[in-house]
Image 1 (cartoon, rainbow over the protein chains, first blue to last red):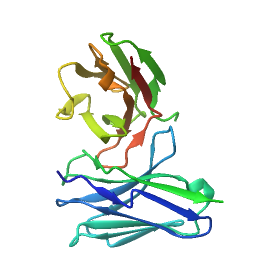
Image 2: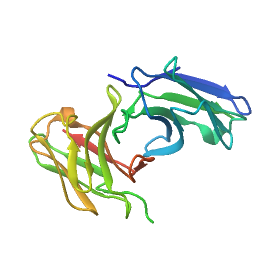
Image 3: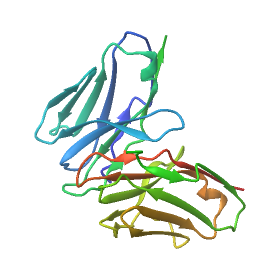
Length: 111
Length: 112
């Protein structure tokens, strides 16, 4: 299985702090995506990073990808209470549309 | 666009009953995915379609589950007969080729 695995499973921080979540996977990928899920809602796409990219930014989000270590990290800077959600990484299988999701990191940002 | 639409949002049924979940993908998207989410197993891909054709159904748990996509704007996931272990949130998602997936709000299924 090439399932992504997020680490940590749960993270609790204060508003204004940075939050870092990690994802590891097992086999070669074309791209890696991060999604967010608010409680009781569907997943929302945050950012996609391709295998030939090392870092990507989108607003307060910064994603890195290290294909040699088969790992990625998602950094949320200056966190807000509204960032409270579960965050999932998802990996493709080289050319396939099929995504495999990890179990997620549950982030709590305390006001 | 209204996004991916799923119905019903909540379904409570008794063991042995047939359950049909419905999905309308985003117009113009040619790929459609059905997922199941539980605390124990996380988010699992059940089946996905491309241009209305099932491409990978390896995640369908057993013959009690079936999915159809009769046209580009509609898909169903049917469970017959339903069992308590089928209780989960079922998501439908759609996408353009090899792009981000857009998820619907999900159907919370409870089988008593």
